[in-house]
Amino acid sequence: MAPTPPLSETRLRQIATDACESTLGSQSEYVHSSTPSWNSSIINKILEALISETAPARKDQPPAWKFCVNSTIIQHPEAVRAGEEDDEDEKEGKGRGKRGMHAASGAYWNNEKDGMWNFKFQGEEQLGMDVVVTIMWISAI
Picture 1 (cartoon, helix red, strand yellow):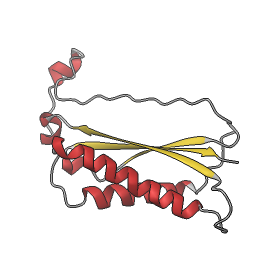
Picture 2 (cartoon, rainbow, N blue to C red):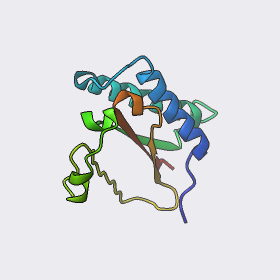
Picture 3 (cartoon, one colour):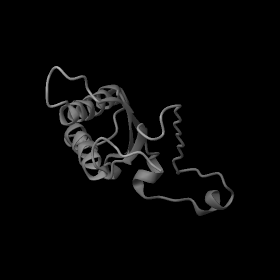
Picture 4 (tube, rainbow, N blue to C red):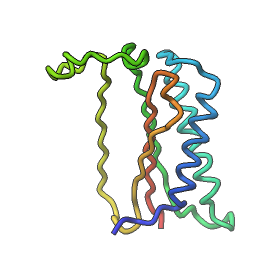
């Protein structure tokens, strides 16, 4: 049985989308030197929303959740951004002009209370990048 997240999946998706859009909305392309600040901004906006929306009703109560947020930004190769494909390379398995990325996370925790959720931002194609966010929650009680 999968744990119930502290917020609905719909709300998690909206928080992550809002953080990515507000951070990257004014950008026109991938800029490597900007990725550290973009990642920090996305992470901080998500954490701020998660903490705000799960805060206990009374200030003297401890928070019920701890959160970890990871943001990964992957640059698209030039050929992918231009819409080019090299069928011969693809048949040979070279994958030139393609992008590849694999990420995995694992944790040792209470499977009934703690969990993780992954998100791929859908508004990044025109910017020449992928943005992948992972939100983890750990029950503090």
